[in-house]
Image (cartoon, rainbow, N blue to C red):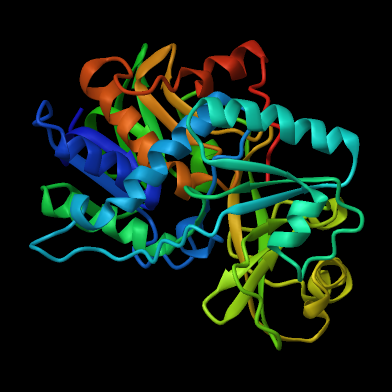
Length: 397
């Protein structure tokens, strides 16, 4: 058995999650191994990191997701110092405008209240308000059907997701991580251990540990090692538009219908989960845009909630692919019980950018120390897939 190369850790997928793992490994003084990141698209033009709405929130219903994002916002605030290279600090244009969730009925209100209690207990800066307070703070919203709302006063907002990915990548390379443009197609195992990664040209790379951060390609890669994971490729659309009126302090608005909209410079960025009959798994190269989704479905919802949006000028739109965990829509993170040197970082279902700092830190800790040190990520572990016990999250957006 011959190998062209050998590395202590091979990470398949060089976008934000893979590069976060790589940097956290290289930056840890207890790690002195060699790290290889394999990325099939070195342009990164089609990865979720580049095409996402790029936002962060603590308004989740499960403690682990809240804690992951609490660390995430601290990391984003300090990124200029943490990921600077040769005195050049990355800029990600973090804007803490907050998420604003609206509730139109008692059930939705009760969910907001229950979530708010957990969020604030864990340290998130959330404000729960009634319709009168909502109308006072954002008088340009139509609030006649709203009975409650929740807003992140600090710690929530949006940023340059592509900039975050490149900052991790640049810093990892500066610390000696090797990046290679290639496609990993097979994980080779011997008994209960991974021994190599095979590339599409037949080359085999020996490894001590493999991290599957392959995004929408993660399921095929894991299956090659005999590990089934419920990841499917899903297309999500983002539309932009300009509005005639100035709306000060506009947040990341999450309507009770599931539609969302937020500022993006002088424009607005918006989206909504498409109808089920439009949600088939797309081909890997299908980035076509369904413009009627905006014209016929999304725009009417937004204009009803924000009357000023009746007068807009549509802008550009694009599609991105999510690695959706169809089991419970939460990430699948950590070692595989029967294949201990094979790590998963998959199924982020649209939350990969905001979760990448904590996921990278946690996986690096587990690879180096054999356990999570700062935050226990085991609630997101693969064992729940095997046991068929979903990790329930009621605030999936």
